[in-house]
Structures are given as C-alpha cells and as structure tokens.
Image (cartoon, rainbow, N blue to C red; front, side):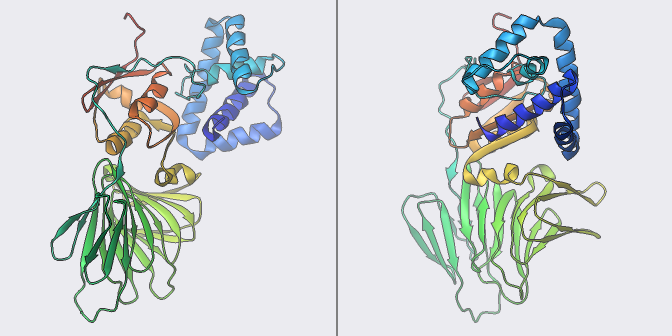
Length: 389
C-alpha cells in the first residue's frame, strides 16, 4: 500500500468513525489536525461527510459490506470484524469517492479514448545553454560535451551540466542561462558547488563566477536548490519579484502561472516581497500574493512538493487544472476542458514520471468523475458518462 493510499485510508477511517460514533480521542485529534492543515482539507471533510450520509440513504447494507470485504481481502489478506465504521470507511475508499481519492488496487478497466495511436512519451534530460557571448548549445545529445566559457562546463549524458569556478581577472560579469523546455528536466551544478534541479518550462540565469559578498541567480518556472554554505556570501534566488536569501539550505521554488511558492526542506530562508519579509523554517511553505503584496505561510509535508526531482508525480487533493498543467509540461501535450467546472475537480494520485501518460489518466478515470480523449498530442477532458450514454 502506498503512503498516499495509507494516509487517505486513515482519513477515511477517522471520518467514518466520527459518523459512527466510534472515534477515540487520539484519532479525533489526528482528524482535527488534518482538517486544519489546509482549507482544501476542510472542504474535503465536509464533502466526505455529506457523501457518506447521502449514500447511506441510497445504498443497501449488503452492497457496501461486499465492497468492504473485497477491499480487505486484497489489501490485508484477512477478514476483519464487520462494523458500522467499516461500512462508512468503505464508501470513501471506493473509486467513486467524493473527493476523487484514488486507491491503486488495479481493479477495473479504464476507458481512455484515443482517436490516433500517437506516441506520447515522458520527458527527459534536455536543455538549451545560452552562453554569455550569445552562443547556444543544445545539451540533450548523448555524447559528453565540454565548453570553455571562462569556467569549465561539462555535460554528461545529456542531463547534467557542471561548472567549475576558475580565477578570472575580468571585472565584467558574465552570465549564462539554462533553458529547460516542455518535456524536459535538467541538473545544474553552479560554480560555487550549489546544486539545482530544474523542472519543465524553467529558466535559470546565473553568473560564470560569483564575486563579492552576494551570490545571485534568477529563476523562472520551478527549481529545487541545495545551496553550498558560505557565510560571507549569502545566496539569493530572485523569482517573480521575490527575493529568497539563504546561507546554506535545501528548498523548492515554483513560479508557474504567475505564482511564487517557496517550500523549505532544511535550513533557513528569508523571503522578501516588496515591503514584507518572513523568516522560513523547515516544513514551511510561503506564497506571495501579488494582488496585495502579502506573504502567506503554512506548514506542509515538504516531500509532496519535492518528489518531482526524484521522478515521481505526487498530487494530494489537487485541482484537475493543476494536475493537467503539470502533465502538459512534462509530456509536451496540449490540454483542453469540456467546461470550466471540470478544472475544479480534486484528485489525489501518485505515479512515476517516466510511465506513459495514459497510466495516470486511467487512474483518474476510475473515479468516474471525468474522462479523457487523446487525439494526437491533444488531451481533451470531458465529464464522465457511462458507456452507451
């Protein structure tokens, strides 16, 4: 059972126990803590309660009991004592659950529609390096590459570029830009030893040599940073009008769709936007609200926001617009929706980034909330309809 499934099952069990009146104080505290983690979870909680109560009125006890026992046999290999809480929990972990919570039993067949057998492959290591002199170098060739730019640049296997800082008597600052296209990802080691993972549709502007008491780079898109410590020269990431100042730390920065969201894994970061600054500690996420110049912070499970660099898609209660945006970037496809309301549907799903796009879409289709039509490199999202309708 995946971590995502286990967490969703626990939440389902807590909500079911609350309705059935069997929830102990420890579980009640865990449920309350989960509800307070995000306004999205509070919304899911209310929807889940409404879903259970409405379905209890419609569904017969034997049908729900049978579904629960099938779930037990598959995931636990033994039969548990049938109780009211089990019946309610079963309602939430079934594929038709209200919040789109997915359980990965593999049962059932997806009905993904395709009008052409176009091969849509996952992304991979590719980028364009724009040198200070304006020359462009493609970095997705399999052969190794070495370029003299005033420092030493080495590309290995088309997915990694490493800078080694050298003495430079020139007073002029020279900058390179690494551009990662749709369907790409790339790893970069900066001249000071700082390591950066760049996601699809991202760009990093950086100097060939850090000088003075400030190290500064500019980011567009998404990047994960492991900053080399240097107390004499703080590291700054400029992203969408915000300034993140660090000494040595690990954090993720996203600027897609005009948002600036920073998630701190370890260390400390001072985030400044306009006249406001916040000090971030581990497991804190900060988001800039450009409409009013404010910075909001929240406690999060940081792995949810960093697994992409380890080759995993992880969405928890994410709206379909966000999910499809990430898939379009990684698989380089265009996505359209049958209506705007479909974008608001929420799903939780976990999958390796290097699997076929249809594997993830079929998992979502099993909720019977939406269906997907693939035509060439176009993915159309439609409202789910039963076969024959």
